[in-house]
Length: 421
View (cartoon, rainbow, N blue to C red):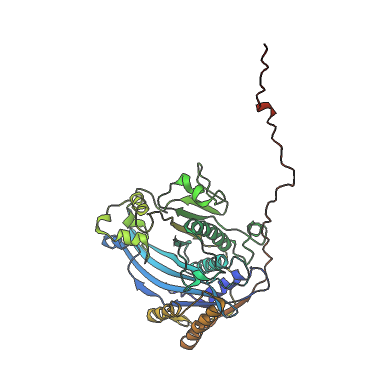
């Protein structure tokens, strides 16, 4: 595991994705990441297994996008690279490398100058960078995971009061993440700088979709037949004999483990996650995956009227050589912060004086934050100018201008019978 994660490559992949947004906009991408540091296993209970050993390294990544020197979008993720040794029934030690990324926060400030899917494209660029890093490690797939829970703001303080920010409710956020994961996985597998629009993702000569990604979604408290109700009829979920959804992303309902499996042995436990907090309790040692989902549905964080969702996907790594990125000859340690320095960056962006409720306050807060980053760490940025097609909004459906039909009630009127004397 000598391969290092290049922050310039991450920024360049995000910039390549943003370039497909409607032309006429300029953005700057900043990436802050930590150096690799060892952590406990993502399945901590397996350390008691004498036939299993794991060495896991972790890093934290913060991606920030600016427009006209104002922060407009951000993403924070936790990445894990694990080297495992396991002795199976054949008594021959098996070695494997696994790469998993947990997207913890995605947020916008409300200061984007035009309506466009900036956050979605930012996620797609980040997922594409994971594919590049995983290919260098010679692994077959990379896991992308997230827990969707609606909050008014994640990274930008007081942005919930910004009139330009579109805050989603819990169901709206779950639907947004399902569509975003669909686009991000397809974009990464297309291995091209083409548009994320569905018509551009079809296989046609110079845009070749690689193997199908397998994606999982589960909403605690809802069953598989309720997926179209929760996520919408166009979500990609078609409950049928094979449970598949589309030629490029195979959507399945549930966690990515058999229902009867012991949760402690297979379910990844990421930091600051409801599953991790639930499995930390001593009486959960024998819980199956099915029982874990049942308890999540009545937990304080996922139950009590809340609609949350777990997403996970296994993104296949392209067998062909990924295109190179210019200007990526950076030393391994350059741009990688210590854990303490990274915390200082988070403290700076979460500072109580930061204010994104209005344009002037947002620009002042952005300038204060970027000056802190530049003076203390001097991390280079990647600039990008968009050149994609304009986004055509579907026109509203107008009913034909025909006169309303007149109800004929004559047949319902009972005529008074003549009385003969």
